[in-house]
Amino acid sequence: MSKRVLVTGGNKGIGLAVSQAMLALDYEVIVVARDFKDFALGGLPNVTEIEYDLSNIENLEQLAKEVGNIDILINNAGFMQPKYTYDNYPNEAKEKIMNVDLHAPVELMNLLCENMKKQKNGRIVNVASIAGQIGHPDVWYGIAKAGLINATKIYGKLLGAHGVSVNCIAPSPTETDMQKDNSEQRKKEFKKTVSSGRFAQPEEVAKAIVWLATECPVYINGITLDINDCSYAR
Ligand SMILES: NC(=O)c1ccc[n+]([C@@H]2O[C@H](COP(=O)([O-])OP(=O)(O)OC[C@H]3O[C@@H](n4cnc5c(N)ncnc54)[C@H](OP(=O)(O)O)[C@@H]3O)[C@@H](O)[C@H]2O)c1
Image (cartoon, rainbow, N blue to C red; front, top):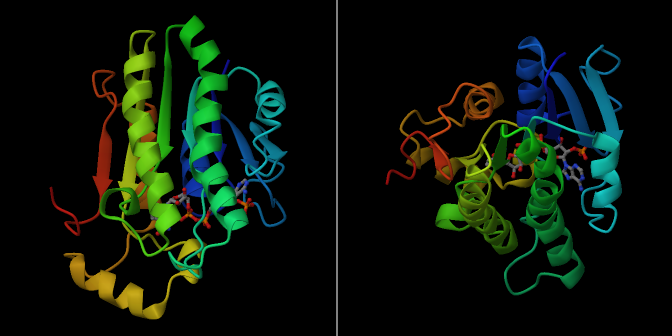
């Protein structure tokens, strides 16, 4: 029987590249997102679509029941809203980004680790961002991603003893739809800090996620894997 992986936001961008790679490795892929109309893997055997808005944190328990037992959780779904400045950021917008980018991924770890613990085997990969390390003009995006990096460390400790490793990645800007929300000026400025002078491709980022989710030694636990081509060398 195929192992089961949940990829939140596995219908577009980085998440889609992860879904495609995991499918090619013979995993059963469950995708949670809001919009499946142009989903490249729609209707394929071994792919399940679950339409769900992750800002709805009240019903995550119900969502977890629908997902069922999984072997791997990829907390990838996320968004930013750089149109809001630090001094003009509506409360509703703050709540939404904190729910989708931090609260939901943490709750999904809580809810979906049970089966992994029972079988003493599981992997969780959280998709954070360089924004969580160096800050971001969308302050709440940076704050949420910093929280996810921190959550990765503590869940690595909590779940490691049960055979479940928890890691995260911190990519710098990557060529996906998300970049439509970034200003041309910021993109130009950022490219100056990257040694290759270009943004990452989603497939490059996905390769790192898939490695952490599959072949990576279990002793690698609680880390943040930088994917930034020296734009934040530390
Ligand atoms: N691209 C970058 O420059 C970059 C850099 C660092 C980190 N990241 C992180 O990488 C992850 C993937 O982003 P991406 O670059 O691939 O962007 P993307 O192409 O815009 O994909 C974002 C994904 O998240 C899903 N999503 C967003 N809001 C959601 C919600 N409320 N409920 C359920 N699903 C939701 C979207 O699906 P639906 O729209 O169908 O719901 C989509 O699949 C995000 O966590 C992002 O913060 C991106």
